[in-house]
Amino acid sequence: MPDVQRYDHFIGGKRLAPDGGQYMESVDPVDESPVAEIAVGNATDVDTAVQAAQQACSQWAEMRPLERGRVLTAVGRKLRENVDRLGRLESDEMGVPLGMVPTSLETAASYFEYYGGVAPSLEGESIPLGSTQFSFTTHEPYGVIGVITPWNAPLNQAARSIAPALAAGNVVVHKPSELTSLTALVFAEMALEVGLPAGVWNVVTGLGADVGTPLVMHPAVGKVAFTGSVATGRRIGEIAAQKIMPVTLELGGKSPNIIFEDADLDAAVMGALMGFVANSGQICLAGTRILVQRCIYEEVAQKLAGAMAMIPLGRDLPAPSLGPIANRAQYEKVLGYFEIAKQDGATLIAGGGPAKDRGLYIAPTLYGDVDMSMRIAREEIFGPVGVLIPFDAEEDAITVANDTDYGLAAGVWTRDVSRVHRVTSALQAGQVYVNTYFEMGVESPLGGYKNSGIGREKGLMALKQYTQTKNVVIQL
Image (cartoon, rainbow, N blue to C red; front, top):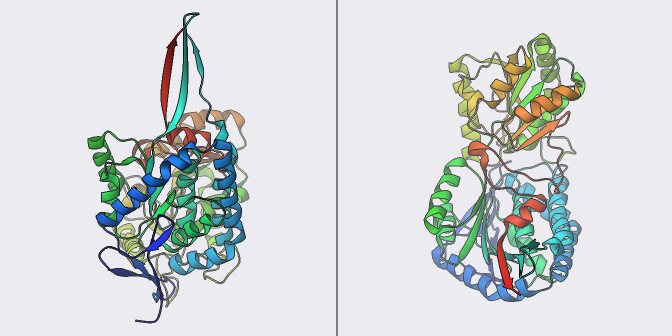
């Protein structure tokens, strides 16, 4: 095996070797060469991390919110100062082009800065009960939060959950994906340099069954935030139900992007394209079902195919560009859907196979003549694959858009303001973008309907969801 760096857990402000002494490879998807060795954790490592978090809990929770906020703002600043270093690690592990990395990491920094600023806003309320009683509420942290994050935007996804959890006075045990653990391990240690107390953010790496499950089951963990698949989310929900523990679950999507005949077609085509190829399609919010009014269907299909042909593929490229699929298992899954599409009778417009002889690259792919009976219209592929679905009337578009087990996001392209209000109110989705796609700041809540999850991340709503409300009534 080539000489690569070995990474231990980060627990209680220190690097800690795994209890079982085992390590696993982290692999570069461009050439499948080893990037690093990652500690393989177990339940003992999880317990050690939870204990370290508990020891740090009182100090952090009792800190004045304004002071906590200053620390988190400094953490965000530290991240911005290290975008190049962290971006290289993230690119090495998941193949995202270097020109695309800064956007993701700068957003991660924004989470710490935003929640640093709003940390003092967790104010209670007074409740009028007459002149003989005084009633008020407070928002208190849960204590230890388990955060489990996926591989498709490693530090961005971690910051989205960790920043509000810490702002609310909680401490965190973080289990990143075993495929993309490096930025969490490196940056959690960096955060100590700007004042984050040891034990407030702990990172335990390894497999879901060995680390994730013990973390969710641990009796001292008061809440879990999970981003990932519906199947894993269900298992976490079952354990949480047995514990009577709250969870935030941000799960999959099969989001519709609806283009009406009066839309600005050039803008709609580019928005729809980036809606399913950004990050090589490895985004849960991806607008992979492109619903197009029939009278403009052929024009949109032609414009989309032309725009797809102009997208460069490779890692050492400026934005916009596409990298490889982040791991071989996902690569094989996406390739498998091409055969499924063929069997179901979909028309291949562009792509439909590997893009290069070397590396896990898949060509941006578009199918036409798709209907909701086909698996490619119903199942989350998690690759740069879009499907075109024609519709006639506005009511038809709404029916097709809502004909899914998911409800994470949706897009609407139209110049008609009345239609905007009618359609957005009828769509069963947690986020609806109008005449844009993916344009949502850290201030806006994120979450899904139906199988796309429970609870909300981002914005002030997330901050309150990392607290429990206490009511105090005083007899005067």
